[in-house]
Length: 93
Image (cartoon, rainbow, N blue to C red; front, side, top):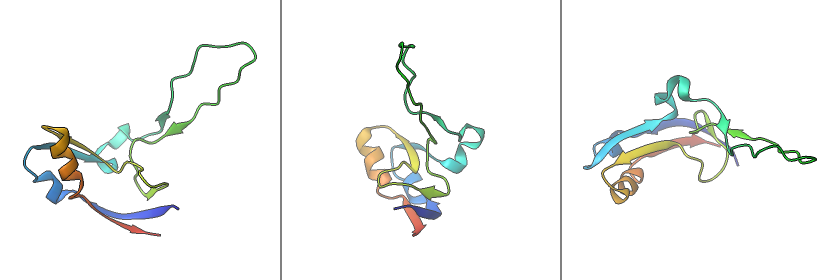
C-alpha cells in the first residue's frame, strides 16, 4: 500500500560515528528524476522490450515496502546499517 511521506529526519543518523553522508530525495535536486531500471538489450527481431523507469529515492510517497528513502555513505557497511536504523520517517496512509 502507498503512504505519503510527511517527514524524514536523518539528523541522529548523520551524527552516528563513521557516517560520511546521508542523502534523501530532497538533497538530489535536478538529479532526482526517473531513470531506467534495466539497460535495453540489443535489438532482436520480433522481440519487444518494454522499458521501465523508477525514481532513485521516494520523495512524496512510498509505493512499496522496501522502497529506498535515503542513501547512507559510511566507513563500513555495518556502520551504514546502524545509521539506517536511526532514520525516522513519518508517513500518512
